[in-house]
Structure formats: structure tokens, C-alpha cells
Length: 141
Image (spheres, rainbow, N blue to C red):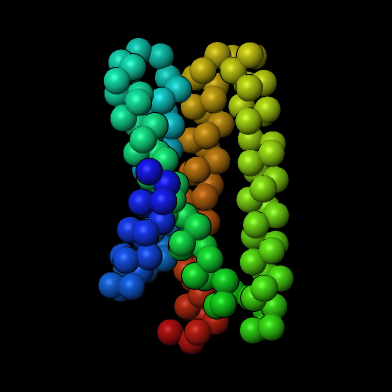
């Protein structure tokens, strides 16, 4: 599912969809899916569908972020280092996210995980327009 989202994102950007639309759309969609996955009362089949959609949509994010690196790197020769930094930050999230989520579930049940995930994704969605604004300033559009 994740790979499909990544390929679709590449196709959409190649056909003119701005990165900001992908980032904000993916984060908002994932926040809704996460809420549905973690809250009580959602039928299991719907949870499974939401998990699949979440997995596909999260594949959009790397395509959007990696194609932005040449624009946001301080200098062209730092695109490689910027790529490494993006990967490291992503890996820190992958390392810390599960134990933090687990601790929240232990403390407050599965709905607590919905809050964490939805708030984090809301912050990511809010960052999209800021990145777009910076990008437009850098390229002089």
C-alpha cells in the first residue's frame, strides 16, 4: 500500500499538483484515519480499511519531501546532507513513536493514541503551507 502511495504522488507531482497539496492532504487524511483506527466503537473491518488507506497515504509524504530538498537545501552541494538529515529525523520518529504510543495506550487506552497521532499529523499539515511559502520565496515565484 505504501509503495502505491509513493508512486501516485510522483505521478501527481509530475502532472502539476503542488507539494503543499500532497503534504496537507496526506497529513489530514492520515489524521482522520488514525482517529478511526484508535477510537472505540469502530467496526474491525472499517479499522482494517482505514489502516490500509493510512498506509497508502503515508507513502505520499516521502515523494513530496524528497522532491523539495533541492529547493530547501541551503546550497546545491548540500542536497545530499539535507537528504541524510531528513532520513535521520524520520528514523528518530520511527524509533520513538511506537514506545510513546504504547505508553499512551497503557496510560489512557487506545483513544490516547488517536490524540497523539492526530495532533502530530495536524502539526504536519500546518507545516505544509509554511514550507510552501518558503519554497515560493526561494524560487522567486
